[in-house]
Image (cartoon, rainbow, N blue to C red; front, side, top):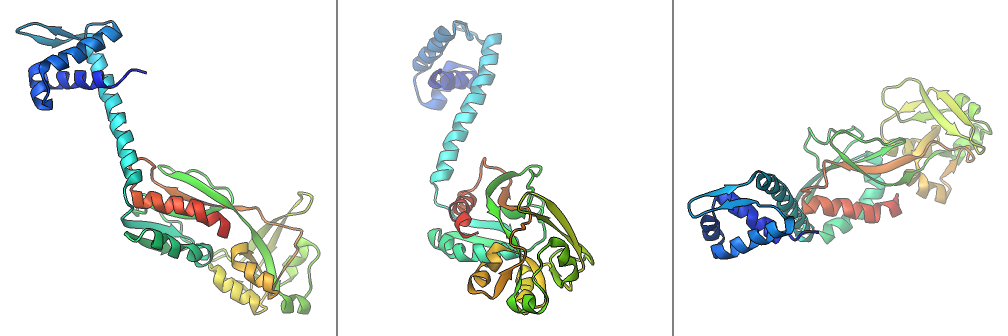
Length: 299
């Protein structure tokens, strides 16, 4: 690995066009600059500059070395900048997006800790099930839950963990209707749907031996909000497919009961997307690192 000092001084000499001008700009003797350039030439085994009392010229190979030296020095500056960003106190505004159910359950439990840990950060949290355009709408980050998360143009993705969705209903409804034993029986029962503006919907289920079943159903209630669907299920209006984070407390208390517990739906992956790691503001980095630390345990 070549030390960078000689490349730095050589680049400054080329930039200013002479040892004397570079020495004055850097506040060091031109003899010191000459020693650095000579040492670099000796290590590389080539002549980088032509010296005379009346003429200063950079050789052809010297021009090539100069271009590479500029690139190396720029990367070194970027490395120092990255450390300074990492060590700086997070401050300023973070604009983030989050799905409704995730915000109302898991995120609501941990956000106060983030705000207490970083008192100089302002968080603008856009809570919506709409898939926001991170780049064009000026978001710093967006939380997503997708069965098959894929990369998005110009964005970096960081996954947290898989999330379960469960078929649930109130004990009263199942006592009154029936407890289905096979997936196809779901089509004859009252259901509650999440997909917006869809008269008929489908649930894709995976059985205990890996078999699959696609159940078409016409929900009594369609609402793009899990909190509303949970309330409807608690009131005995039908069977709902809810994230485990939304239904877990009611399952533990017995207010809700799993339907077809041996059958599951494909797992959704909770992840966050953001524009770039390079040049990321400390406040944004702190928010993403905090979610990586705390969110998986509460999902």
